[in-house]
Length: 306
Image 1 (cartoon, rainbow, N blue to C red):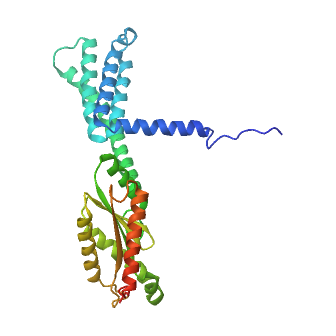
Image 2 (image 1 turned 120 degrees about the horizontal axis):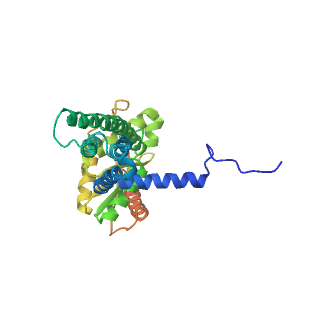
């Protein structure tokens, strides 16, 4: 039996599938820009208007109606219900004018109003259906994207979101500080009170970090009991203030499973431009500063969780 290449998925080759995905993504990115989207829809409306005056179409005006549905559908799918309905109204007005011109009905009257109303209904229903489905689809997709960037235990961001945020800040030239936080004596807490207590300690730390930082900052779980925080436009003094607040608030927290435990953390900070220019350098230097503090505190006897 001669060998053959099996089709990919439903018969589409991997190369064609990848190309189709790339084209779709690029088209979506372009249409998300309002100015570009309005220009594209405007050109489509102009093209539809020109199409109605083709000699073969003028003899049968009904053939031109479906052309105006294309810009309406594009607007509704790309921008949602509101923009779709506005485009539908414009398309209905244009289609009604051209239909009246072809039928030599230039005076306002019942027939002209009916001509316009029929097109408003047809294009409006198209825009309403497609726009509603598009908004529901984008809402679900946005919710899924948000879930993909959240840590399931603590509900703060994950490390993927951290790297994305750093790339955005670097591209915009915004200075920032990277702060790493590590819970002290988590293993001892797990051994004595169970892993539920350890999970509660991690969640409590995440909640404290979230309350201390600004809404423009970012808290992400780095892994295990470590968190990484991005402090926008913060210098070393500002980062130290944040670290002091975190320690103070953690001392005031109580774990229901282990009420006699005082949560303590070790922290380290790195400043963009001063301590590194890449996320890896900043994380490494902040991590080294954090472990240096942890060793110093253990050496001085301050590392106990009680």
